[in-house]
Image (tube, rainbow, N blue to C red):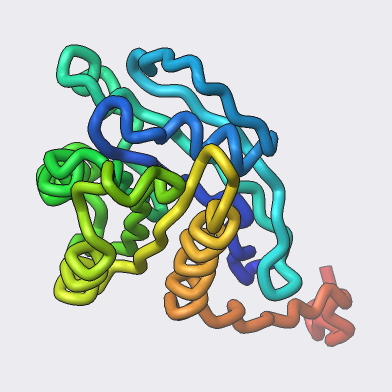
Length: 207
């Protein structure tokens, strides 16, 4: 067995946000390139996988879609643990969904219990960018400033058209890859040579 620990190729992504912001639609758009206008609330949590390559590294993304409705949210917290990156999603047409992002972040910290909460990576997605300007309730400047203040990556996306969706998920995976690269790998164990040759020294004792 190789004593050097192999880099992990499975990245777990958790998606959080209010009910109706488009978490499931974003996931479906990213993985299957499909969009459905029919809304169906997620109960508990569900996940999809997608294989990608980042810097010549083969990576399997396990992307968890969690319930945003408070009736079902408690069922999803069990799936927070082990997440490598958290994607916080809001709807640009609903101001409250933006205001609740910090609540979701705190819930993730509480339920996911990451080993280093201060440096844990987040990607913020402002969904439904394809809306009519008159229906927009959260400005790009508001979102960008909040993300800059907190040190989060930020993307405006449209699950409906697919605009910027790939970029957001790729950034999430890249943040994980960069973070794992920064973790020092253990040194190889020193090799030990064992002489299996029989002792050729003859005994002076005659029996």
